[in-house]
Image 1: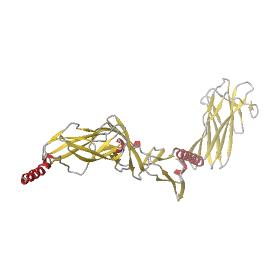
Image 2: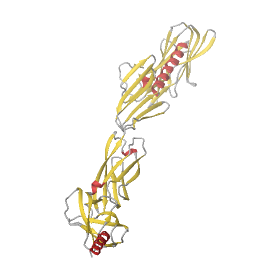
Image 3: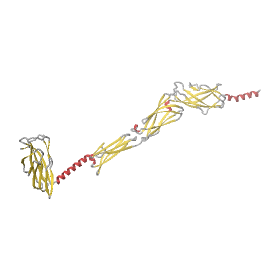
Image 4: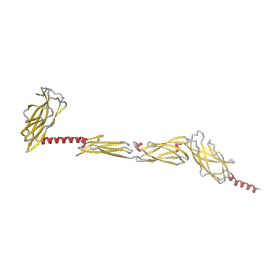
Length: 463
């Protein structure tokens, strides 16, 4: 009898572990993340091995969290099963950060097993991190990223990335603890005045109609870039332009030097005025120095007008030629005309010719030509003409010889009964003479008289 009782007790102890709830898990406790802003559960997959008897198990807690699946799940003895659990926080749950959550698993016999879960409760904005690689003014693109820091799968994210350098919209999914990268092309014109340093980048993130903003930083590293351009154009008006542009992102010094010779500098205008001017021999150096901010340009314009020296040189050449011609002639003729008051009311002019010898000359014949419609008044000065030809309109004077520096003055009066209006022109006179055995000619200037001009009585001749 005693042996039978002992046998039954031993059998019960041997059978009881098989009948009891005995579940095995790969980790000491579970971990999950709950994004409190979203109407989404904290999800995780429980990897359960049944070391007890086959049957049904059910999950529940005493903290007011809703758990799915709410119905029982069958699991055979010795079976390892993955069961996805969804946990919803109670309404107005204010806890943030880590929360130790206890839940229970029971079987159909009412036996239960306690399990711990470390629940991380975060807001949507705390689930992400954004950033970018370093870049400089010569970069044509920049890589940015968004990182999901939590054990939570985002199936659809709409994000708008903004910074001083770019603005872009993206739509993507983001798995648990994963990173998404984007390459963004840069337009230098949009940020060519920005200095090196750290800049804020924001991401406006929308998930299931919930929106939040996340901030990160961009490092715009220093780069000293000063480019220069020059252009020269024009022949008589020569223009030389120089441009120095700071295309970097730090304040940079730009220096320019222009040199001109001491002649060209007289006809050169420079904008803006140089900081310093230095002369070394026949060369003049103009120097500029500026601290340029990013995107700033130093423009210099040097303009040399060669028309001025050309006109001056031409004027000097004309004077020299005239002087040489005057100095090179043996005789000089100068002709002038004056108004004469006539008693009979005729139009009358007094013609005067000054004959000056520069050297000894002989057989001098001075020929003057009369304008049409005029006659010569038969009254002359000290020198009398040798002949007057009314038909050919010529009046002539002869001199046997003239010594160097000798001056003879010829004068006569012409008149006309026909009134003359406008500008009255008298032709030049001619002198034919011998000098050193050679026959030469010389000519006077032309004389002009404006007939309608008012002439006073003082200084007038009368005949």
